[in-house]
Length: 126
Image 1 (cartoon, rainbow, N blue to C red):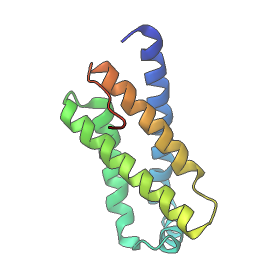
Image 2 (image 1 turned 90 degrees about the vertical axis):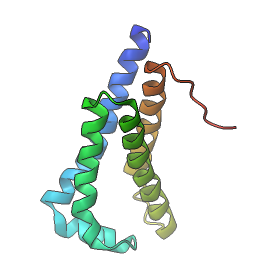
Image 3 (image 1 turned 45 degrees about the vertical axis):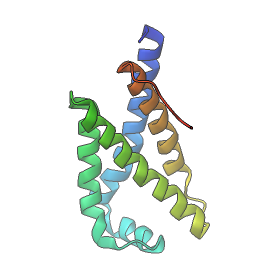
Image 4 (image 1 turned 30 degrees about the horizontal axis):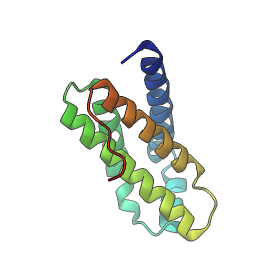
C-alpha cells in the first residue's frame, strides 16, 4: 500500500473509531437517554451494555489484532450494527440516521483499505 493510501486508511479508521466510540460512551454514561432512544427504535433495552462491550471489543480487534480473520469478523459485526441502526432510524422516520450512516460510510471505506493493505481483492458486487 502506498503512502497516500496508508494515510487515507488511518484517517478514515480514526473517524470510524470516533463515531463508534461516541455512541459507545453514551451507552455507559447516559444510559437513560440511550434506553429511551433504543426503545423508540423497537429494540429491547437490555442489549445496551452487551452491545457497548462488543463494540469496544470490535474496535480493539480492528486496531490491535494481527489476525486478518478476527478483523474481518470485527468489521462485519460493527457494519452490521450500523446497517441495523440506519434502517431502524429510517423506518421510524425520526431523521436521526446521519451518525449511523456516517459510521457506515467510514467503516466501509476503512474495510476496503484494510483489504488493500492485506493485498486481498475487494469484491463489492457479483
